[in-house]
Image (cartoon, rainbow, N blue to C red; front, top):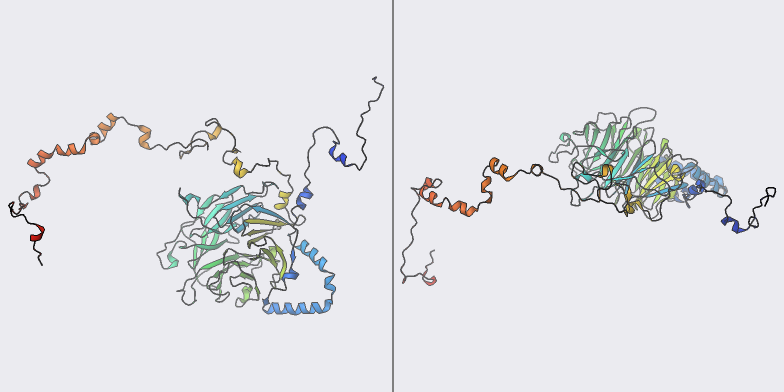
Length: 590
């Protein structure tokens, strides 16, 4: 072959539509696989949604606003004459554009029911709590489509547990501070509330009150379990807790030894002796400015409202029969303008109240309650109070109209498992739900939502082995595979040696026995004999040591000399051998 000749490379002679072309390389060199983000997000698209048109007919409302609504619906139906059938598809598309529910991200990190969820103000960290007393912390920035798990799971009462397995306290509510986001409030079925950092460390634990005091004004803390709590809307150092000891207590997180204010609620229900359980509490502040509002509900059916800035000596308004007595009112929330209050009671009703005329509900709607099994079921206003969110016992998410409480959208989340807690974050525009089957669902829309679940599904999946389950094959404390063979002591750095408590830093090395002060010095026998009194008696026989002083004690009774002259002489009856007294000769003395 000469230089003038052209080099011709023969390629496969295949047709353009031949399927074999998909298996042949198109270029040389190493190829980088690119992730199809659009297809990855499309896989999280929800398959079916229920519209409010099918669920709204079953809802029963009462009140003046509901009557106007029924008349308006009747007029609209007479004017439409069948034109509504043509606009059904348009209404469905409008619902998809209005609410971020087109896609969902499922986090299965709890084994039992998820009772409460919260997001920090930036929307980057999600915390969820369960009946088993565990709090799972999720970071959206660290998760990928293949690593949807919590980066930390904490137990607020782990420090109190001994080596014997103890009972965990179900967590009723956790809530990030709405101003800073560096702390969150933890409420469990325990008299002491906790303030925890965003990383799950306990920062403050409020004091427990004296249960033997009758007057609750004199106790420094709750004496029984706390049912709910929330933060002050404008002061980052204040929070309020509602307890089953018939009190609301306002705390300063910088002073854990005593509450700042105590509000004792006196029940008027017959047979209650002036006490009842406070079931939930809400603290709201108008966005345009104005006085704060503190609203709480009780087990006797009462709904009480206080001025959020005090004084708290007496309520500004009180409704005795807001809900049916002896039913657990689990949810309460205040609108962004501070004028409307919505409550979800254990009597299968949702009621809307006006704080300016706090006497009778504006609207009452029938809604099946889940508070009989889960007393943490909540109801929340959407951002800017444009909608109201709540769950149902059938596993559906209900988005209600804030004026008449009629469902605008009913969509299934966990069919068959009740939706216990809901939240709508205003910054990332995503809805988070927690269900009884242990799942946390993040509903979003790629075009409407930002960050959060959108960032998670926009990342390339992390490459891992098909059998690489970190909870089973990875040692999280040292970050190596559990199948690795490690020689004890060969791991350098901080993993060698022991901690201050005597625990080995290498989990594969047995713990070192703790040394007492006596073991550190190890004194010899000579030192013990010279410095420790009566140390020579350690190896003596105690019987021989006592008999050694027997003769001396008989001659000179040092300890029994007090009754030497007064001790009576023991006298025995003299009997001969022939006069032995048998059992037949004894006389019974009466």
